[in-house]
Length: 148
Image (cartoon, helix red, strand yellow):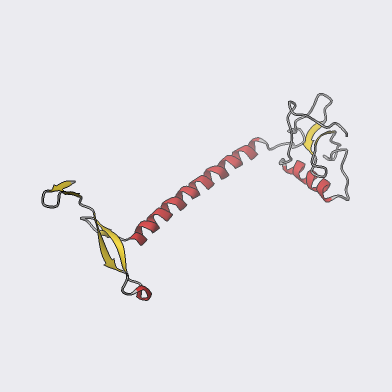
C-alpha cells in the first residue's frame, strides 16, 4: 500500500474501475471490475472461480462419503442376520416398519421375523432391509416392546 500525500488516501495496486458490459442487451450499462497490475478480473470470472471451487469441494465431500459408506458396508458383509443386535433371549432388536415400534423378535430360518406377514408391504420391506443389512435396530439400553 502507498500513501498518496495529495489526496490523503491510501491506494493499493488493486483499484476499482468501471468497464462497459459485453452483453449487447445491457448496452450502456457499466460493470465494476477490479484491476490488478497483471490483468483485469471481471465479476463473472470471479463468480466462475468461486463456483468452480465450491463444486470441487462438494465433489471431494461426496467422494469421502462414498468411500466411508463403502468401507462401512464392507465391514458388515457376511451374514446380515448374525449382525443384528439381540437381547438376552436371543431375539433380534428391530424397529418394526409396520407398526413403527421398537420390537424384539425371533428370526426364523428363512431370515424373517416371527411377526412377518407376507401380505403386508412393510413386512416385505423389512425382510428386504434385513437381507441388505440396512434394517433399523435399537440398543439394549433403550426401552423395548417385547410383544412378539
